[in-house]
Amino acid sequence: MPHFDAMIQQKILLKRKLLQNQAVVNLLCNVGNNVVEFENIRTGSKSPAASLIKTHFYVPDTQTVDKNFITMRSRVVYTDSNVVKETGITVYIICNEHQIDLLQGSRADLLADEVDCILNNGEEPLFGLGGIVLSTADEVQFNEGYSGWQIPYITHERNRSAELL
Image 1 (cartoon, one colour):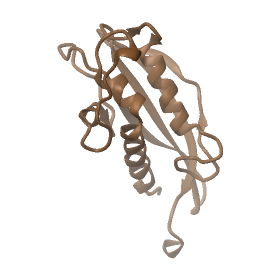
Image 2 (spheres, rainbow, N blue to C red; image 1 turned 60 degrees about the vertical axis):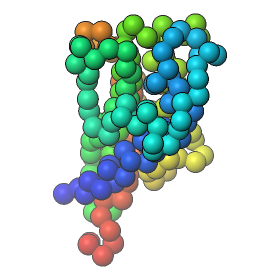
Image 3 (spheres, rainbow, N blue to C red; image 1 turned 120 degrees about the vertical axis):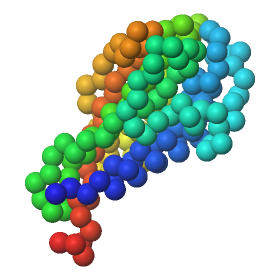
Image 4 (tube, rainbow, N blue to C red; image 1 turned 45 degrees about the horizontal axis):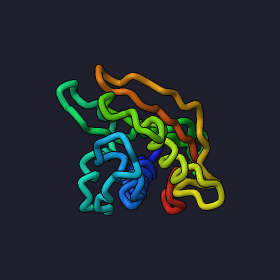
């Protein structure tokens, strides 16, 4: 039976890194259609973006206006040993369709690129054993008025501490 603390830690670490990224915080919080004119919003755990990054799956209600979100969903993909398990984390970029169009492109595309730079960075993976691999990402419609990206990543984690084997 797999242990789930690895997935908990993945989500916490990813949220922390997202909140430290100025571009992510600005794209989540600023309104308007030009990234160049965005005000720098405070980063870190006290950022207003903290409530817009959720470590669980969430789709906003249709009445929620002018907000954009990043949410996550974890899964155990495969485990056949007591030592290593394959885990997945799916990141959802959810943008209000009234704010998705920017002069620089789609807000959802820009957020997806920032998330991918944080997670799929090659030599210094954020978590996991041996790196993080992007699976097939899809543009999706979440709810009326919200669209964005569903981006699944796969990595390997320790399944059990050695003393529990």
